[in-house]
Every structure is written in C-alpha cells, then in structure tokens.
Amino acid sequence: MKSNCFILLTLLGLSAPAAAQDTNNFDAYRQNMLDRFYRYKEGVLADYATYLKGVWERFETFKGIKRQETPKPKVLPKGYDEPVTNPVTTVPQEQPEPEVQPSPQPVDRPKQATSPTPSTPVVPPVRMEQIPFSFYGITLKGPKAEFPPLPSLDKQHLSSAWTAYQKRSAKEVVPSLGNMVQNMHLNDWLTVDMVRHYADKLLASHSGSDRILLQHTILTTMGYDVRLAKTDEELLLLIPFTQMIYERPFIEMNGHKYFTFKDSKSPSTESLKPIYTCKIAADVDAGRYVNPLISGGIIIQHTGTDHPCVLNYQDITIKTIVNTPVMEMFRHYPQMDIPCYAKSSILPLLREDLLKQFRPYIAHLSKPDAARKLLHFIQHAFQYATDGDQHGYEKSYFVEENFYYPKNDCEDRSILFAFLVRNLLGLDVHLVQYPGHECTAVCFNDPTVQGDGYIYQQKRYIICDPTYIGAGIGMCMPKYRSEKPKIQLW
Image (cartoon, rainbow, N blue to C red; front, side, top):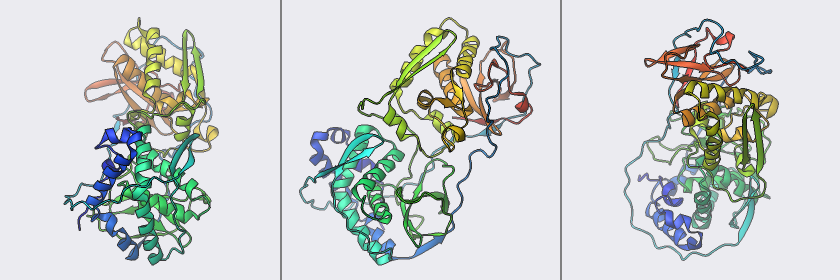
C-alpha cells in the first residue's frame, strides 16, 4: 500500500508559489495540481472508497475538556486606587517552586516513505460557472459543481457517493479553493472553515450529511487526515489538531484525539453518543493534522467595515483600526492553550503600528519603569468582563482582538502585556496561570527590582499582573501569593 497523502503543499501551491499567487494562470495551476495528484493516486485516496465499504469501528465520544476549571472573578480585582510607583508595599514573597508547562509543540503523524507512480494523462481543464459565498462578510467565488444527494448512510451508498464527490472535487473545486487559501494566507483551521462555508452555500438545499461528505472529500484531497464518522442519523467530521483543543467533544483513535464537528446548519446540541468511523490502519499515512496556529498574518481586501479603537490612560493615547472580517473569522475560533494565542500573529501591520505608537511614551524610561507604565496602561485603559458575560462562552483573545472588543479579561491582558514587553523592552516574559486567573512574570535581569516572584533556571521572574488594578511590578494578588504558579512557556 503506497501511503503518500501528504499532498497539501502541492494542492495549495506551496511548492509552486508563482502558480498559486498568479490568479490569471489558474489553468496552469490546476494542471500542475492534477499532474501531481494523479502521480500519487495509488495512495490513501484511491483506497478510501474501499475503507468506507469495510469495517466501521465503534468509538465512545468524550466530553470536551475544560482548559480552566476554576471560574474567573466576575468583578475586576482592585488593589489600589492609584498606580503605585514603589514595586511593593509588603515584604516581597518568594512563591512556591513553579510548575512548568512546556511550550505547546505540534503533534503530527510521522511521515511515511513514498513511491511515486507514473503520471496519468489529464483531461484538459474546463472552467465551471462560479457561485458566490460569504466567508465572514467577505464575498468569495467557488466552482458551481454539482453533487448528487446521498441516498442513505449505508456503507455501499457512502462509498459510491464519496468516489463521485472526490473526483469532482479534485478536478475543479480543490485547486480553486486552494488558490484562495494562498491569496488570503489562511492557516489550516481557516482553510477548513472556508471549505465549510463553501459547502454550506453550494449544497444549501441538501442534507447536512451531504455537506459533511463534500467537506470531507475536499479536505482529504487537500491532504488533511480528516475522517468521516456517522451516528444513526447523520455524518460527522473527525478532525485531528496539532495542538490541544478545549470544550470540543472528541474520540481517542490511534493514540490521538479526533474532535467531532457536526454540520453547521444542524442543531448545535452537544452529543456524546457513540459514533462509528471506517477502519484505517494506524501505519497508513492518511494526511496531515490541522494546525490552528497563525503565522505570517491574514491578507484580506479592504471591505469598508474596519473598526476604529481609541484607548487613553494618563499621557498615553493609542489609536488603531481593526479589520472587522478578520476579527469575525476568529470569533468562534477553536479554544487552544493560552501560549498558542501569544505565539500566533493575525495582523502583523497592526502589531507594528501598535509598537510604533507605544515606543515614544517609554523611550526615556528604564526598563522597569517602562514595564510599570505599560502595566498601568493595560490595567486602566481596558474595561473588564469575563468571557461568559461578554461572549457567552470561553474565548481567549489574540493580541489584535483586544482592540476590537469593548472588554477583556485576565488572559487577554496578559497576552497583550507579554507581547509589548517582549517586543518593546526585549525582556523574557512568562505567562503564569493560577486557579481561575492568568498573569505574567518578567525577568528584568536587574537585582534592584524587587517584588513577588520565583526563580526559574537561575533567573528571577517578577510577577506583573495586568488585571490587579493599580498594582505595580512585583505585586501578586494576595490570594495567589502562596499558590504554586504554573509557568506557560511559549
């Protein structure tokens, strides 16, 4: 069994960027994709229809894991009416030896050896009529391909329909959507999300199972290890991620979590019923996992719906304009570990503009004084609200989202403060987690800077809490001073 399904780079043009970026050269891009696809057609895709007709294994569905069990405070903690200039008003306390949470590392399937087969002649491309679909307020156009409805969820019907859907997807849909992915610089998760929007529009009058089947054939053709699953009533997608995802039901398969996704138009009630998925050997290279991290930024054409933001505190005024469609893309983003938000970059130009605006306000200050000024700005310039009160669900912010929503909470402020300290002051900073609370700790490399903190790898880190209103550097909330801090490296 040849097992090369690692064709995402090919399908999305990463191995041929010129073709992917030149939208006027679509036919050449499509032809190149098809040449490479057929070269590996003896891989897992060729056998998927057989898998669907074979053994379907039963799996128990587990409830989504909560990232933080302890609820956050409803009211913003307040320590001082005015910012203090003295680092501490009590004797500095060495906190218990911290627990270290390693930086989230991507988990991926080991690459398998490949054996290319001779290229198969390709039928000359025929451009299809396009259908517009909305992707968070952005109008995109995809091929108006025709897909027959599923007669039933019987294995034989599924196998036949999957083959028909996959062939149609590979010829026109995948290269068209792949071209959009390249032009917009979408990461893996947003690629999955865009495919969902396309399927929802194209098959709006079809069943939810038809839409799930179309998403599956597109994503597997793109090279992702996305599995098809079913209950007695409907099809589901099983998606493995390179990072941990929270608050999402999952099954355990081959030592990895596959998270369940229903049709977006179906009732959103969480079901923990057993599900069934076709058996694929663990050593088969079924594709790559979905990486939710964002690097390099998202490129979206101006839509005229930008969101202005002005923040003031004392002598600091920060003015930004945030791209609304991009923020909408991340409104229901899968919930990750906190460092993943800090490691990601959505709008690099906005970040550079923020740094440019902050620099003059701290240019004349020592690093401790600059950190203190930044800390007090974040404490006072933003309004506070828990995610449940503001959004109705747990939502952590990427740096940019702090300038879009009217309020934020402890982890959002900590991510922003850590970003500013690293990029403006060049200091090492930790994200620090306590039960129900998130803050930061900064290594000032200055023995004169005193305050609550801990030692990590022979360096002293000083607690800096963007949510402890009025507190200076070195001030840990009293309720956490004896708690064991959990360092979140990133």
